[in-house]
Length: 204
Image (cartoon, one colour):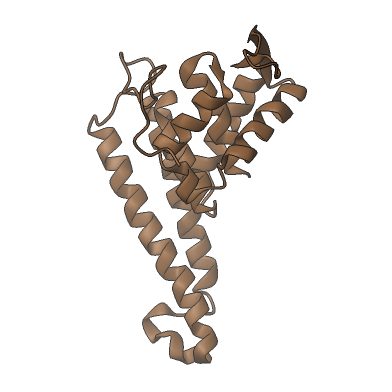
């Protein structure tokens, strides 16, 4: 899965309708240009591609003041909303997602009901446990990586990453179940986007 697809769909959804610069500004505000491939070129390309695919509706809202193409605002179509939530659920559940995909999903998890988000993360924990069990059938972490020579360091790193991922995920589930954050249907959500014209202190 590509993080840019989830990031762009989610950023547009947060505004209802958004032009390319707003999407870029929001993602830079999140620091996504540092931890993902959400660079300006890829953002604008994703917007145009997903409009062609019927996931976004492109509204031409104003002519260019300098003779260029008209300003376009994007809005999720019904198919776009379905794609967004499918990507979000997959990203929260799958144990071996790349870090940028998981980061994007955490940024948008509050678009789901609280219990659903917690359950998806519990599935992630179960998947991590299953993967670890399959690996430790022939590699015993307690024996140290040296048992497989220096190649053992590779498996040791992955097992350690799985353990750390499980610990972090369990902590997040605990915070969610304790009432942290505002999830879908619970009231006014945290505003994680910049208002029109608001200066972005993290702009590249």
